[in-house]
Image (cartoon, rainbow, N blue to C red; front, side, top):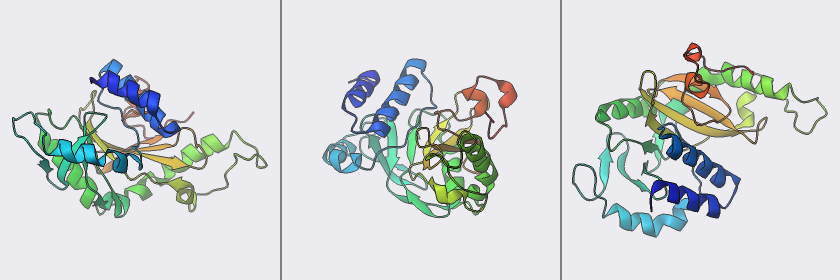
Length: 243
């Protein structure tokens, strides 16, 4: 089954809104041939697909002709993710997110001629002693303020928060997605989708260039930079684009 048919299957059989939204974003990627699609994957997929994944892992034929599992520095053994042409690690500790444990997903790794770029970004992200979330805080708060300004204090959607409490209203994602940017610097970027109380529909996207610097904060749109999202080079370097 080719990529578009796999996406069609997910759209038709998605168990929840997040799952169907993931498929919709993947469909956009397939049509546009972009490498910047990422959606948070679902906790209930692992158990359902485990027999398939376990069998497939033992019979993978990689681009270099080898069969079997692939080892990636810092991640250990990775395996193909069933419905998309991604690779998935086991749970690892992510230093850049304060030691949060999560599975890392890679897109485009197998065919990339410069795999060391992936290795370096992953190493930065997993072992970073920088508090990347603290660096993202003012931008996350601006996103919150922009969104929350649409509501009155007595509205159900209104969320009371400040700079010190903003992360209490974020459900941090645990499945970072690593891919090479298709445009601009063509560096390796790591995208993380989170949920947030002030924007339950579009959530919160955090993007880190080379796993060591926050470069994009805002609602999840699948893009790795605001310059790419708005097709505007003037937005290069803008972390949060105000509405």
